[in-house]
Picture 1 (tube, rainbow, N blue to C red):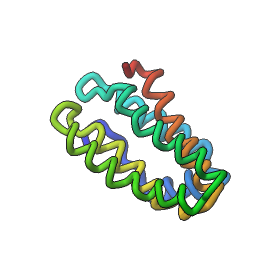
Picture 2 (cartoon, helix red, strand yellow):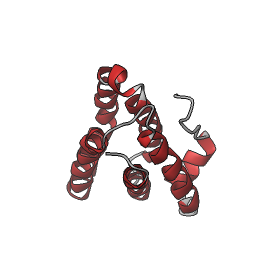
Picture 3 (cartoon, rainbow, N blue to C red):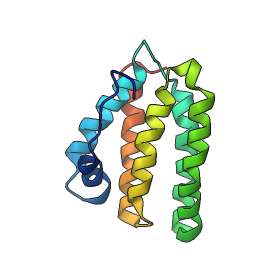
Length: 137
């Protein structure tokens, strides 16, 4: 991870994704991550984040109809993000890779659980909001 990118301990991520009492941690880390992604030294555009977030929103819609298929799509998002991270590595100084790492670890904690998936979406949405709030373009 980049120097300014926050380290998210596994136990904190587990609390954010897998428990109802991780909301304050979610907000704290989402702000740190969003700010790091908007950093002038390694800026990541909102469109880059939204490309991934759009896919998550599509999966969210599918989740209500066919959870098994949606969970499969969520898991298959990991290689898509890895490809995008490598493709954008030079342009964005590993910012996409940093975000991908956090999202990949978060996806691993969803475990086809409805509440965990909702918390994952909330976390990603908060990261996107804080990225924009901290000057991400």
